[in-house]
Image 1: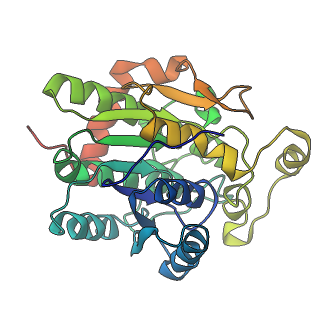
Image 2 (image 1 turned 180 degrees about the vertical axis):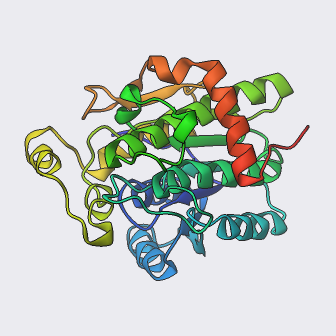
Length: 303
């Protein structure tokens, strides 16, 4: 079990903190002394998660704030509120996501739902929070990708899957986009002399409601292969599955642009993982970053 180092005095934001790996990450950070913002789409579910955290850690300093990553106005409102507090942000854990939505669905801003929720929303959030992050002495951004990114590509000619939609292909593309975002942010920080560490993680095959909530949207249900995979492949609980993200966010051994995942790919303790070929393509990462800036209207601070 990965032991989160002392986080007393630090402020952390965890997206999707009402369940699964996000709730576990928030609980472990709070247990290590951090002040934790549970950034969730449904505040009532966030309050329930907060109550569970407080039952384990009665003295934990936690709060729930609404954040819908599928709505850029919500992302801006959340970021504005956090920056208005005037407190440096030490840790941002981009954890929330949606997976394998059966029919093409759009966000409030007209993006394909998986691209918007998993990548464009977190991209906007990260950039909008950079002023608060760069006010901290040693800020970190840890972003959750997926093993599916290893087989993905960025379809610049149909980024929003308007001509052809595949639930699994759209999900894999969004998680590769997360990986490229994290790697490009690390390079950007290095070029600009920022003290920010950006790293990426994947949870292996972790049992959370991510695997069922997405496929059941719009009245859908998991396909036969998905249902069989849930039963056949080795899997692990959120307690283990969240550890690569926590390692990226808190380990003194994590490095800028590092990639962390389970030792045995699907399950196991955390170890450094080599970035797959698509995740090492700097030209694609830079092009995707520029396209995300255009689509969201959000850019990193110039200095």
